[in-house]
Image (tube, rainbow, N blue to C red; front, side, top):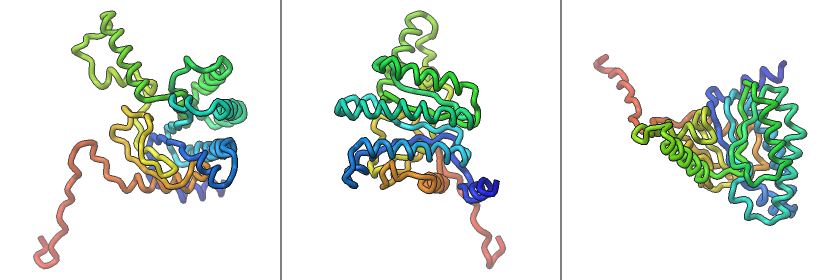
Length: 258
């Protein structure tokens, strides 16, 4: 109880409702230490566990993590196999804790290229936790934002051809409702580790007005302190969404009192 009180007292005052995280730098972290890339990915899973727990404690409602992009299939076959093994272990070992903490798990991305066992695990995670409301963990797995947008546009075209929607009435909301993230608020903050400063095909549509924090540390080094620092940086930003910042009234003149 005392630990929870201390955590609450030290937490940033205004956590974003939705945070997206590009978990980058596992391989470089391992290479810098003379370790195999697999060890970097293992430490990356540990960082993910820390981040999910910290995000829940800090009051984040939605956490989206970029775990495996559709471009990652270009990596060596052994590394892909290792990553799939880590995913299986994460779901098998951590799903009970996530469920017990009231975390809902959602998976975004294509499942067409995934093996049957992976598809079954993803479905199990979603179905077991579908009624949880404390926090939503969105795992972008085999995900690419361009593919997501193209698929949404294709569904819109199919609906228009079938007469289910008037093409003249298609708007941003129409397309947004057909994205993988339908029903989820857009991210307020996107964090990327490893010092790279790009989105890498992550939430391109949804990130239109997100704030970005790029950290020089590699993902295995990410912890609660790093998350709190990113949230504090977010709190200092002024979000105008294309508008004009409010102008503060001038301070009274000490000489005239006006």
